[in-house]
Length: 227
Image (cartoon, rainbow, N blue to C red; front, side, top):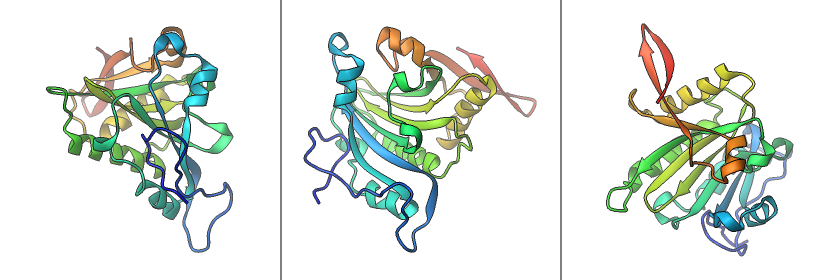
């Protein structure tokens, strides 16, 4: 079976696939199954739901800890992923895929990692991405409302995102944002952003026009402030 590298264009490669609900002998089940996906940023004027869905490629699926590592070791690291490529890790249950239209009442938290002279500190980005991957697979967000994560490689900045399914409970949404900062060990003053999918479907961007927030610690409690 040919190896698939997330971020590699074309359909001529794949990692090992685990069937949902089936566990190989001796392997340790995860709370839910997961799949890696990737695509390439499309020009805004040509993008529609059908074209976007056709551009998504599944890089591998797993539902055990061992299956995760079998997939993860074959994926390209951030330093080797081309500009304008997006990589995702989403739950398998209930047909979760990285599409705004699947979560019209949700959105995503965003961390922007600015580049200096067109270059990102790839070791920092690589560690952040791996920490985020391990956090969702290990259910460290402790919230089923988290449906997936993403990494976007761009020319001026790279972006990490955490997608949530529904915003009916504001406390849950902000708890996810706070947990993101803890998982990535970010400074308290670090700004993270949030983008509603309803807005994304209007301006055709996951990241443009996102609102910035910081989480200030006051008297032992974390408080959210909009930037």
